[in-house]
Image 1: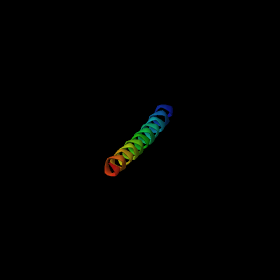
Image 2: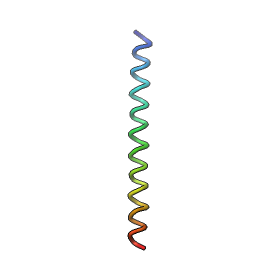
Image 3: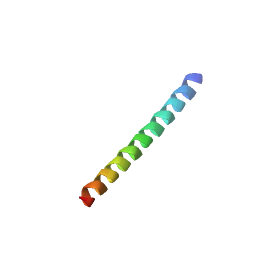
Image 4: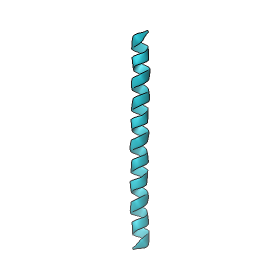
Length: 39
């Protein structure tokens, strides 16, 4: 039971980190795209 909870919590943490990384990547891509457009 404890191991199951541990695995569930770990999966949630990983999914949260992945979502955060994706958002950061998208933000960086958008900013770089805007900079390229300005030039």
